[in-house]
Amino acid sequence: MDNFAALIGIDWADKKHDICEHPNHTDKYHYSIIKCKPEALHEWAMSLKKRYPNQQIAVACELKKGPIIYALAKYNHITLFTINPSTVAKYRKAFTPSGAKDDPTDALIQVEILTLHMAKLTAIEPETPAMRSLTQLVEYRRNLVQDSVDLSNKITATLKNYYPQALEWFKEKDTFIFCDFISKWSSLAKVKRVKKQTLLDFFNSHNSHYAHVNDARILSIKSAMPLTEDVGVIEPNKLLVEVLIAQFRVLLKGIESLDIAIKDAYKVQDDKVIFDSFPGAGPQLAPRLLVALGSNRDRYDDASELQKYAGIAPVIERSGKKMWTHWRYSCPTFLRQTFVEWAGFSIRYSFWAKAYYEQQKSKGKPHNSIIRSLAFKWIRIIFRCWKTSTPYDESKYLEALKRRGSPLLKFAINS
Image (cartoon, helix red, strand yellow):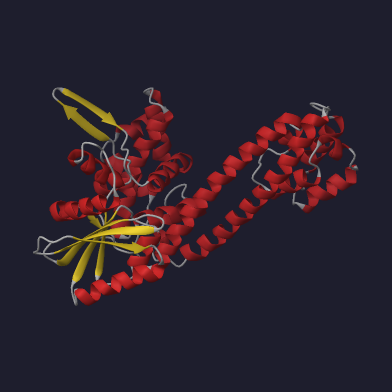
């Protein structure tokens, strides 16, 4: 704390930010309000530099990213600390029994947490611009993919109301051939009037060249029976599908654009060779794993810190003679998703990961629990590779398991 000229808490909001400023070695607390505009934040940051020349200022906020963090991270005289919102809420509840929340008080609470527990807080150390860009790109892509899944489910539900055959003709919905087909022929009555050659030309123009697949589709189209001929059902659903398909196509194009940007940003990263080596990572998950660990190898002292931060390590609680384990609630959701999703994919590509999955499954463990446990194991491996700048080698890992007499290999051989 003595390294900082002042401790500041910021309670952010959409239109204003409440500030509590506590100059070091004083009993004074100064409260102020600034607008959330970039100009106002810059003016405030520069006023701090003028009032505390050649000194560092500690600023706490309940965010680790977002506009205010992006705005303040560029100032060398400011060290940003992130405080979990639930920590502030619990602190407020402990000393304000009414549970009342007001912004200046929350800003003061952050200053008090900084004063008493700075050693336990994490200072935000900005990555390189290239790494920050890649971090946002992979997260935006994951969000768009989830949006596309939600939209695909809506399209599926609507088609089932009046035109279910289209779902049989195209097993994969997140494709342009599906979108273009529904856009051209948004009802069974429309597509049944189309000539065979027109349909063949459509399929071939979308690189669908398997004759048996196209012939089966055309045969099904010509013999299909309408689910309903009630225009009161067909017309509203047809209109809705056309709207949803237009949105779906935009989403798919957006994901394609992000894929290109991610590929370009990822290929220039020095650690690319490490993360490409992990089984099942591929073009989508390898960049996500890279940004999960970042480029600062001093960020974590050991793998357990990463396991806990990512929410993969379970929480063990004790009270009296009782002890129980539960899911870690407070963690970066996207980071946890990255490790869990990759662990699931790794089963297809890693011998030991598949053996571990089958071993746990034989013990009656549920799928989700096995995947989380597998992610826990993988983090130790990925951390070691990242820390030593060494690509993963499955054969070397299997040799290590063999030397240790791992029961996992015995299970794999016997099963």
